[in-house]
Each structure stands twice: as C-alpha cells, then as structure tokens.
Length: 298
Image (tube, rainbow, N blue to C red; front, side):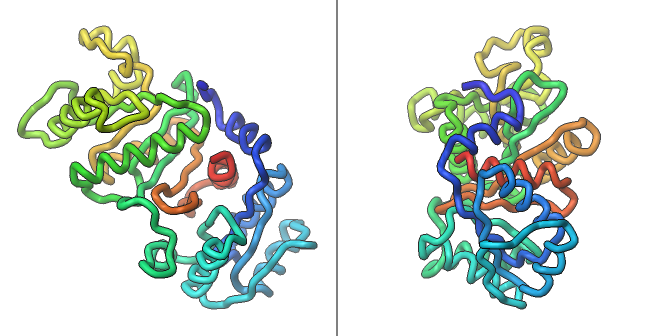
C-alpha cells in the first residue's frame, strides 16, 4: 500500500477498532484541541489525567464536551504520567499521549523496569511527513530521541520504523540510510554504517524491508538526482523511510521540512508496548491531530 497523504492515515484509523487514548497532564489547550478533533472523527476515546478544574476550564473554552469522558484528577504532572502508564498496563487504554508534562518524567514512567511499558531495547522517534514536493508519505527517524545512536541502535531504529509501515499495510518499505554523500568514506561513520546495514538487510538480518545506502538526501528522494549520479537502486528516489545518522541531522531535516518546506507531520515514539504521541509544543493542531491518528491507525 502506497500512502499519499496524512488523510489516508485518518481513513485507516477510522476503519480500525476505536482506541482509548490516555493523556498525561491533559490540562493543555493545544493537546485538548487535537484530542477533541480526533474524538470528533471517531478514531479515539479520550481518557484524561491531570488537573481536573483546568481540564474542565480549557475544555469549556474550546467547546469540548466532556460528557461521558473519563477524567482522573492529579495536579502533579510527573505523577500524572505514572498514572497514565498504569492505566495502559491495566488494559484501560491503548495509546499514551504527552500533555503538559516534560518529556523526561513521561519517559521515566514509560521506561520503569517494574511498572513501565518498555518492549524493545531502543525507543525511537518516528515522523511521517506529507510534503508537497514528494510523491508519497515519507518517514524520518530519529528526530527526537537518540542523540548519537550506535550501530546496533540503528538496527533497532530501523525495525521500529518498519513496524509502523507494516501496521499501515506496507509490508516491504524502502529504507534509505542517509548521510552527507552517496559513497562509502571510511572517515565518515554514517557511510560505513549505511553499507553495513545494507549488507545485513541483503542477508536477511534486517527483515521486512529493503535497506540501501549510503545516500545523500537528494538521491534518496529524487530519481532524477540518483540517475544523474549513476546510482542504481530500487530505494533511490523512492524511499519510504529516511534513517538519519544522528539526532542533530534528523531534527534539522524534520524541522526544515515543517517550517520551510510546507510539510505536515504525524509523529510517534516507537519501541514501547503502545504507540506514544509525543509532539513538540511548536507543532500545530493539525500535526498533533495527525499524530493521534497515526497512533490509532497502528
């Protein structure tokens, strides 16, 4: 399945079982607007944890009818995160969303060895991008979690991203391992890692996808650029996933696409037992809503 736009994600979510989404520290207007819109679309059932009077005040201001919606009062944001994680562990919700709580305490609750939600050895940020200059949705990873991932962590990051595409109906996504150039240079670790990942994939050690690299960004997403450089690859110019070498480059690529490239995104944290909607405060309401839809579609 080729996904052309983020509205396709909403359609997928609508055709799946409605998921219960728990928001940690839910007294945040942009988050509640996104939750309201997702609820209106019928893709989630909200469960709100946080400062109840503030949640009710904000909801009244944005015309969000809370009738029948479960609210767990808790004024401490860090404790809200713990309570939200506990609700998921108890089977009372299937998606976790960050509200007005810092990322660190939320992830601390998720990663707690006894009471957390860790599933894989590496959590990673995954953003699905709709760009007016690309012919389909493209994933970028990791733009928000792993600062300088080691080689084995890159394997886990690929597996997390591939899992997203599998759950959305693409059983063999194309993964471009990107860096500053398209040839292997022993002095540039990103290129040697790319070559190693490509070989591992060809030998079946990274299954469920096609991995190739290294690629510079231009020949990963532009067939004309790849042809001009004589690159022969089924991934070149048609990548589904761009694996960035580190957080610096991934985050810069992601935010450049958002703020200068006219793109819209949906982003989740993968590697836990459930998808985690962890958006930036700079993300607009549409991106937050689409992030909820992506989590629900999976």
